Image 1 (cartoon, rainbow over the protein chains, first blue to last red):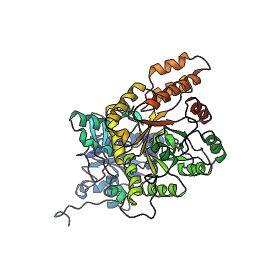
Image 2 (image 1 turned 180 degrees about the vertical axis):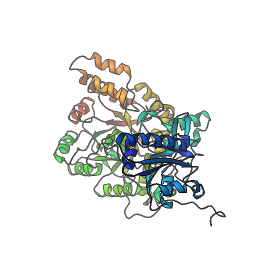
Image 3 (image 1 turned 90 degrees about the vertical axis):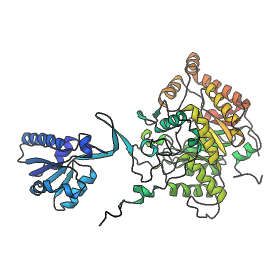
Image 4 (image 1 turned 90 degrees about the horizontal axis):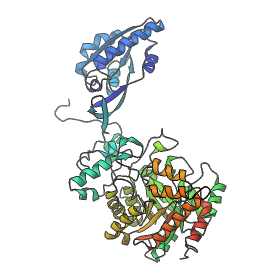
Amino acid sequence: MIVGKQKPFEVIWDMIKEYKKVLIFGCNTCVAICHEGGNKEAEILASMLRMKAKQEGLEMEIKNRGIERQCEHEFFDSANEQIEWADAVLSIACGAGVQFTAEKWPKKIILPGLNTTFIGVVERPGLFAERCLMCGDCILHLTGGLCPIARCSKSLLNGPCGGSSKGKCEISKEVDCVWDMIVRKKMEQGRLEDLLRITPAKDWQTSRDGGPRKSVKEGLVE
Amino acid sequence: MNDLKSGSNLEKVLSAGHFAFTGECGPPKGANIDHLKEKIAHLKGMVDAVNITDNQTAVVRMSSWAASAILIQEGIEPNFQMVCRDRNRLAIQSDILGAYAVGIRNMLCLSGDHQRFGNHPQAKNVFDIDSMQLIALAKKMRDEGKFLNEEELDVAPRLFIGAASNPFADPTEFRVYRLAKKIASGADFIQTQCIYNMDLFRDFMKKAVDMGLHEKCYILAGVTPMKSVGMAQYMAKAVPGMDVPESLINRLRGAGKGKTAEEGIKFALEQIEEFKEMEGVAGVHLMAIEWEHKVPEIAERAGLLPRPKV
């Protein structure tokens, strides 16, 4: 899923304080799972912002609303009225949701309330960790189901580098060395020979390096 | 002689069967050519080639190919280091051609320290290719006369291709296989990480020899003399992939005030003596960073002078 993190409260406040009618707009799928951008978080954030407006003595109306997904047309209908009402919409969806909302309401001020951080998993409640960099050409079959592109700080395809120490990455003792994990897993599986093959330079055209991407599903596209 | 891949002095020394001795120098943090010349003057005639580091520890310095070109002007052979952190495959290939054009004949291929260590942690990292792929790329350009995209290039860069090996990084049991991969990719010579844990290194070299790797590639053992107890403790604790045994720290501490640096040099000299006899070791790479003026003394006391003329 897509993981996000709300921008600092003061940053959000600075973005919205010049508007009279503000809608805090949640997205109840990915970013609800990390408890940062769902409809419940929209409700909490709106109430904190109303308190702030009161403290600051500003005449503002702040409402909240949420839909299932801000990245698909069909879910927006239930929120049309509130979006029309607002001077500014603070979307706490991922970057895709914010942009889709902005595309649909080109005359509205649409603001981002969230930093979209990564595609990851819930390692344990409250702890989210990156797993995929969306390179567009999956190599997990070569690396024992562990992605060095997303999880090696240098995206090495022939690791581990000389900075791997006690299972940790050279950049921080908080970061696991994924190549250490790959090597140990392959050795335990008795598949060391998989690691002796040299992986050639990657074709990054399928990644963002090839320019903004589109994907077509034949038979569905009109 | 026609069999030489690059014709570099380092290659000639090694292929003639001499015990090689290489040094290292970091380019200036600025365009201070005088300071660079002063540092490298200590190394002239003392070593077979001098590694010129490439923004080491991700701190910006004068470009390694430019500093290498200055060494050539001064009559010293550089070993041009190139990291994958700062360049994509376009820049890498054009820099290889440029380096060769200004007379560089040795190149050490490295992934590079992550920029988070350095003085521009805000930088976007590149790592388009890794060190293994860089070795293969340099070999392809030299031996096939082709770019990575298979296009022919006009005059191939005939470089003596080097790579690094860290026997002490984890998982240590995989390190000899990674060395084998670098050799299979096309490394002509290897310079190892600074060695302090001799037991582990002996074991590593035994495995390398058992696999016949020393017959396919020249392996130079990395030596950095400890200047102080503080340096040893820092390397033990703060430098990832560095293995400094407690016994060495105690030995330096036991040397007494004012004598630690001499004890560090003595340990380095003992290491060099052992490497001269160790099967599979073809030379020593001395990384006396910011201690270049000590290199002549170390070379002399190690019995490595005069350097062979080949």
